[in-house]
Length: 251
Image 1: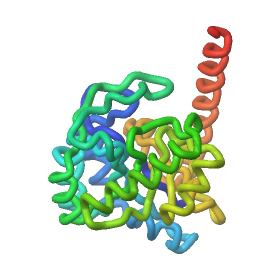
Image 2 (image 1 turned 90 degrees about the vertical axis):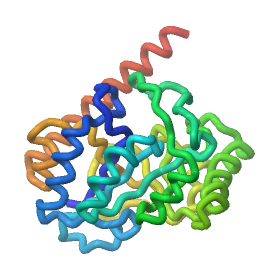
Image 3 (image 1 turned 45 degrees about the vertical axis):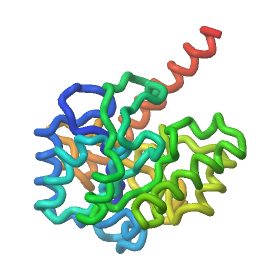
Image 4 (image 1 turned 120 degrees about the vertical axis):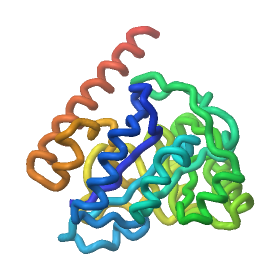
């Protein structure tokens, strides 16, 4: 099995984007000792199809990445990609509420600290400028959000990002084509492992919110793990349909 793991915030708030520090510490210790290969995101697609492997990603570049996550990852030599919403650097995450749940107000890393992380080995990826639902944008806005975030990162860090993450996992056909031209790969929030032949610009990821329990990530690759993911995907789809129905009925 090959999969991309998604984290957002390492904190104890219990929110839909949060993993407690103790849980993250448990995940890191498992990743460092399990025998499953932990590789950079761009290398995962080239990893032997028969080999168990994961790539670690963090969305939104919260300051607790530098405080809680990176020291643990760095100490174990684990590579990670950090996706940055470039118009919010040095600010807080006061964009629209995450669909399906509330978010805590969290500070985002500034360019000085992002450059320090880059120099220490963190790969920085683009995550638009303002964290919009890309399906709602016109062509001009899409160009600004996608190419603008790539250009911001290049200008501020001296390195052009190879990877992109769609805010909320959504892109739309027009957004997808712009991202194809801007970056080598891109991540959605589709909840499943990678499959052979996956589109490099529509990569699925496993949200670690669902892997917080003691029998979560430690069962990676097992039949029970695949069944658990299948069940979670069904429940997520049901929840999204219920939310869509409520929104439609409320109009």
